[in-house]
Amino acid sequence: MMRRIATAYAALAVLLSLGGCRDIALPPAGSYSEVLLVTEDGLLDRWNDAVSPLLTAENDYVTSMEPSFDVKSIRAVELEDFPTVKNILLCGVLDSGTEIGRRIMGLLGPDGAASVARGQATILKKDNLPAPGQLTLIVTAGSHEALQKVIDARGEEIVDIIENSCRERLRHHLLRRSNTVLSQELFKKYGFALQVPYLYRLLSDAADPPGIELMREPPTRILGIFWVDTKDPPTIHDRDALFDIRADYVWKRYDHDRMDRDRVRYTMTRLGKHEAVRMSGYWENANAVAGGYFETYYIFDDSAELLWAVDLLTFAPGKPKHPLVRELRAIAETIEFD
Image 1 (cartoon, rainbow, N blue to C red):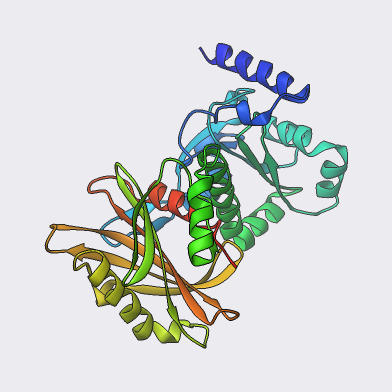
Image 2 (cartoon, rainbow, N blue to C red):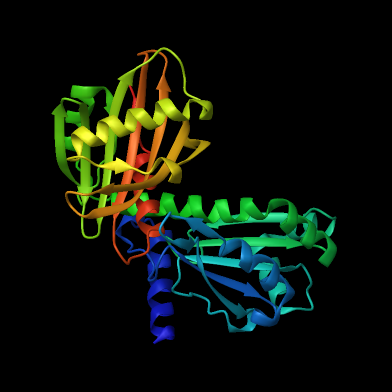
């Protein structure tokens, strides 16, 4: 079975190299939450012990703690030429006497291998390798000591590279069929541009309070955008004011949604090209006997003196939240303002 899949991917790669349209390719099987970690000795390898905890670090979704990625560790000799996973991470010392070292040398090429041999540790991202829609990330150095240092110093960067790539590829896949008519209507009416996948529908569009919501289900994912007048950009020190802005909006908009003030966190971050304050926590609705995770990105538009709120929320009892939040973030990152 694996050989037939490999043959199909090889044929597709040839087609693309001859000028075929990359968009015709389906994404590789599996979840964006899966990472194939390839080291010399797999589960027994020291680099598995160093990298796997970074990838499986848990995210707090208030009612559940969820890992960023599910990791499958294999030995380099077990690696197929065309593994059917979306994310592959090769980690090991650049040593021609090992299988992982030889594989990494082949991916780096002579110049890259020479640079590592001179003492430069490397984190190298290879898009659409081994096939369209796949990511291969290489973490290597010329010695065990140097490799440990790069993992210690840039561990979060390794995770961010994979997560950012997942959102980018997921966004590309979702927007293969985009609702350009709705996007244009929202831009003309409200002055913000957002790329909307066809899988999402307009849930509400009202003037009191002003805002819009897009929804996909099941499970329920909602992306809302609303705004208030302001003259100053927000900071995390404005937590009470930011809490009150969303509390007032969702009470009116979502039939008396509430937030738990004791379970709300504030972080300076970015959403796409915009600096933002992210407020995240738990929403609940006594009328609907429902609740779930939310995060709201506050973005200041000084030219219009507006504070935009990009609101992401889920309702998925008993289901993982991280893939749903990843999808919402992937779409929300396309937002731009007139």
